[in-house]
Image (cartoon, rainbow, N blue to C red; front, side, top):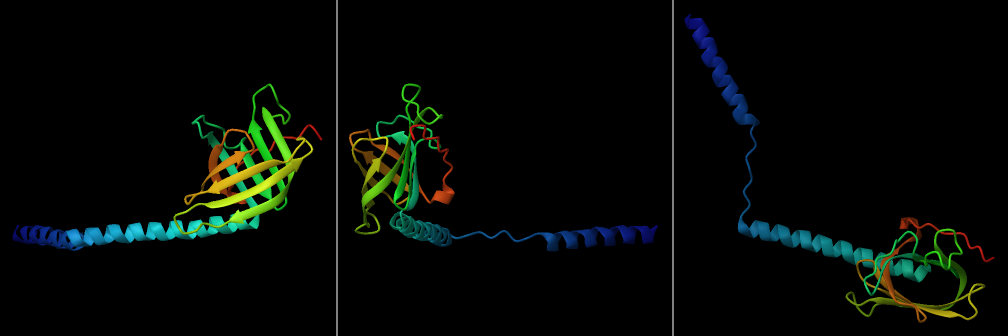
Length: 188
């Protein structure tokens, strides 16, 4: 009976010792350590945004980009997969939803294939200012050249104005990042 009692006590102490080694010490951070961690995370985020901003500028200079429009500046929402401008060197595709009235692309809108002339890229004056792109578009669908002005902001947002049309806003992307549906140009 004593041996069973000894075995039980030994077993209980062994389990207690094993559980005490299995527990991790919870690390309590001081206020200064918490503040330092916040500053470090904020700095990493800013560094990532700065690196992303440099990539966006390189994409803009390369003349290979897509802006997926998601709203008019008035606030009306748009389907970004159907409303966009895609620039590939000297070629451009502009597509806008128009509804059933002017539907030349099979997706409920207009698709204009054009050629770019007078392309001008203006880099930002500093890390907080936007970059600018302007060019003219000529196409078979339009009788005269249309002027396109794009303002690109840090954070991949862009505003686009096209002649007298309402301004649109969207995401500035590399072509491989976009998810656009290009309609058929039925006027060719």
